[in-house]
Image (tube, rainbow, N blue to C red; front, side):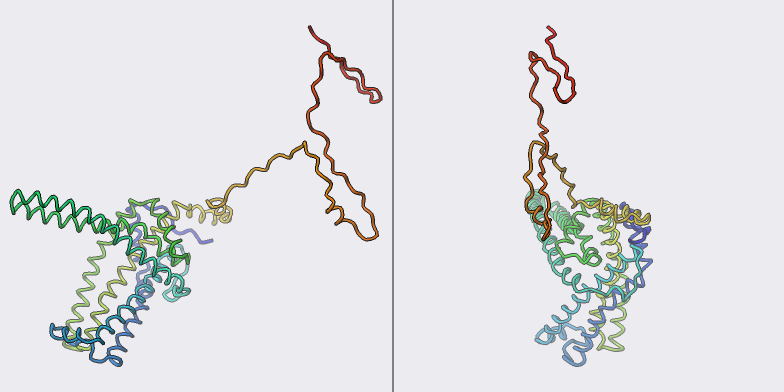
Amino acid sequence: MTRMTPWVHQYSLRDLLDDGFDLFKERATTLLLAGGIPYLLVVGYLVVMRLWVMPGVMPTVYTVEALEEAVKSVSFWVFLGGSSLVTSIATAISYIVQCRVAARHALGQEVSALSVYKLLAKPFWSLVPLSIIHSLATGVISGLVTGIISLLCIVLLGLSMLMGPVVASVIGVIVYVLLIGVSLFTMLAVSTFFLAAPITLAMDHAGPFTALGTSFRYACTNYKAQLLALTAVVHIPLLVLSLVALVIGALVYAAKFIAPSTIALFSLMMPAVSGIIYMAIMACFQTLVYLDGRCRADAYDLVLMAGELGIGNEVEQALKPDIAPTAPTGYPNYMAAPVTPKAAADSLTMPGATHPVISMQFPDYSSPPPIDPQTPVTPDEGTGHVELEVTDAR
């Protein structure tokens, strides 16, 4: 049974934000190191393709003419497609291992940058359909909501044209901002139901649909706090990522004068570095969402505290909702007289020995017939029992 840790309890909105960044600060080195190892595949791919397989495909100077010349080449599109595939694989692996680092640390388990790479096949292949379902859900629902609001805004713009071009321009800007805000908020509202799914894949090795069911169930226990925290977490790291982008952009600019052949490497690794930091923060936040939902829905904190007392298995078994109560056993029918089990008697018969056949006849437990008050009752001869005579009191 896992030792009780300070991270395992039910979280409010403030707790999700405060403890999420605290968890990131405590394990920042391990998170970034574990998340950065898969991107060595991207670096290796870029170096091999750039220097040996397709030399001269990527332009050394980023000008309009150089890009136009590169786009005309089939090799350029092969190179770009391969880099996109390798980057997607590295991103998925990095995300899974960062979720494991954050979850193991929160649960008080031993964690290192290499130990989280064990048994990655099932979580990786489960993350692929989960990502597809998430993209479809956010795209379809956000598109429907945005489309409905767009129709209302078109009617509003048509009416504003009657008030003059200035009023129409102001209303047009407001409508544009409103559409963007509604679209982003809808995507966040849908994504809240998927927050606990990656942690379930990484830690419990569950399938994509099982992880989705668990994540939906946990989201319903504390949806408002999780939605507001997700909105904050999505926007707050943008400041950090902007600083990282500025630093890497400066390196790219310096490489143009020092080592022009490394411009492509820096350009493709810039979003990777920003993504590693962002996914590490999200992994910490999603870990707390997972623990919050598990404590609220499955009483996980009570199970861990009971484990400290040595009764963890009993409490966990009692809290499982899938165990149906035992049906009450009916009373035996005392009116019935069972037949002698001949098969059982034959099985007890040994060669050369005889066993008496036991007649299993129950006594008649039925109620006796009613006594006629006019009939006198006499003593039972031969038994010694004296019966009382019933007389009519009238």
